[in-house]
Image (cartoon, rainbow, N blue to C red):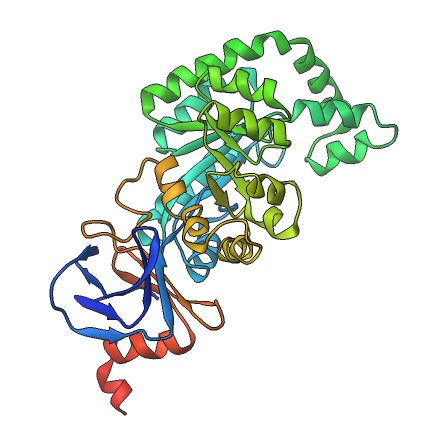
Length: 369
């Protein structure tokens, strides 16, 4: 349940402020970080950190995504919906219906739930409905994905294409014709992407690409304005993005698994981490980077707070300062478990000892009994 907090001061905890941990209090009132004497709650033994911001929260439905995010310490999340090849499970009509459901539930969500579309870049004939969907549903973030190459590789693998097409919800023969037609139109891609970029710039939408294979592709995409590099598929792509001052988002699960993204983080080629649908991996990846000596814990936490806040152009969150939104993740210092999440001054998740502490504040009569 969501519990609006009364004006309160969190004391006794280590607080991440100004790039370092400090033993100081955090005052909350009217959904904002504030100053002044207020009733106190002692959080000794806990760490208070800026709320997690997830750029790729998975999906496809808002309610379970929202609850899982809140339980993992996420206060702002981008619900990611796929817009893939038509006539499959993620065709335009299906995506539109899911967007409407997500928009209808936004105000009731625990987290600040925003919308992220991951779009197949070769859907030339769907530019108009895509632009209209982005405008009407106030999409915050769009990433372009190149699914054509994977389809062509599947077509070249004997016996593999039929199962590949069926997994995507297509009749193999019809899908083969679609892929063949799309490949012949490849020369339309630059003009198509530029047209979409122009519309997104007009709407103020943040856009980028996912899984760029190399530096040359990343450079071409940045030239049309698709600056965000999400989950780059090679070190060259990530290095090119950083050289061009483009933000690089890595996968938290991949960092934990010690895969390519862990190497990219070690090389400093990272602006933010995203959960890729596993919100519990965000904080875990941060602690892993600190434990491995890749970077300090305050800097690593910035990859899931101030870094994504800057990408989403949200100056009122990602840090703990007076005037910012009261978005906080409260972690048990011993277990490193997220025991409470506060979003806009509302307690949206509490468990363990933190749940008992906040219960004594919210329900003092019950606590006394």
